[in-house]
Length: 109
Image (tube, helix red, strand yellow):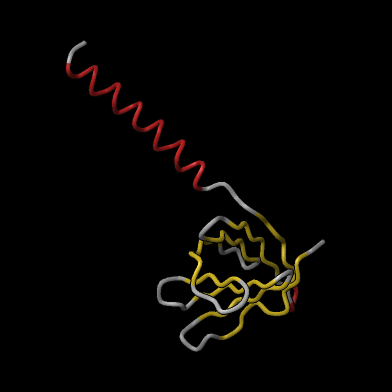
């Protein structure tokens, strides 16, 4: 084999391994649909260290897990978006003032 073919083979093999590892790391551990006050809703897919959210206002995001004394807390880096979850309830706070923008959320059964 020429050097170019070997390099191409290694590149393809490496990409396949990387893709497989990412797929395993991104396996959901749970999901829930929350119905909130004011007709709002949150679809949440939970992963080992993050949550992917689809909000009823059309936004979608993945937020890393953050420190919490009770329940699960997920926050962006500057904590201007925080998703809180405990049992079958959840809420979202946003902005520097931590205004609750999604409240009274309960998982649909």
